[in-house]
Length: 80
Image (tube, rainbow, N blue to C red; front, side, top):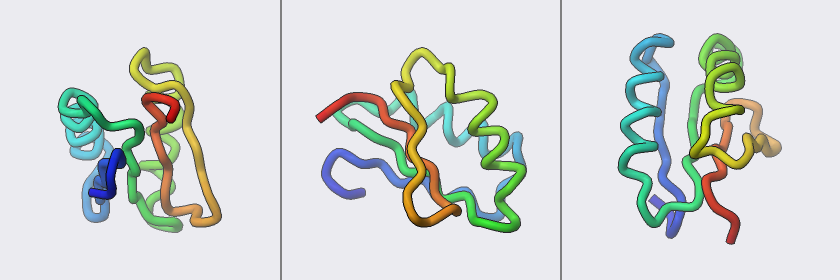
């Protein structure tokens, strides 16, 4: 974990398992400003779609952010 960023590797998880892991990370996110979800690029498409669908409007998430790596999505919880 980088300072203020919780990393969660979702490789090898199905959508149900990933949802459970993300919800657990959101519950323990005290003091964290972002959760970095590593879902993969090609094989992670189902996970990326689930993240977009279920966490874009989640009350604890301010925004979804993608960088140059399409296999990673960040859930921004607080502004710096």
